[in-house]
Length: 50
Image (cartoon, rainbow, N blue to C red; front, side, top):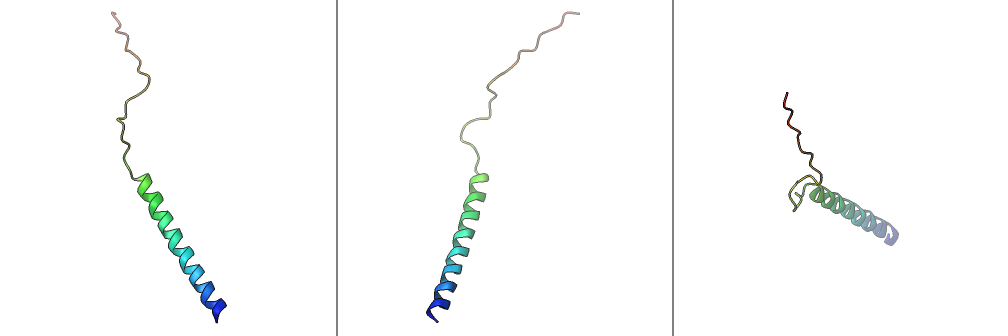
């Protein structure tokens, strides 16, 4: 009976840990970046005088 209880508690803890990790990953992916989205390189448009 002790082994069955230990196995059930282990499975329950593993499932709770997996759900917590999944929710944490989703929260991290949904976070907005703190820095503005500005390009590092910008190309100037050459004006054509035709």
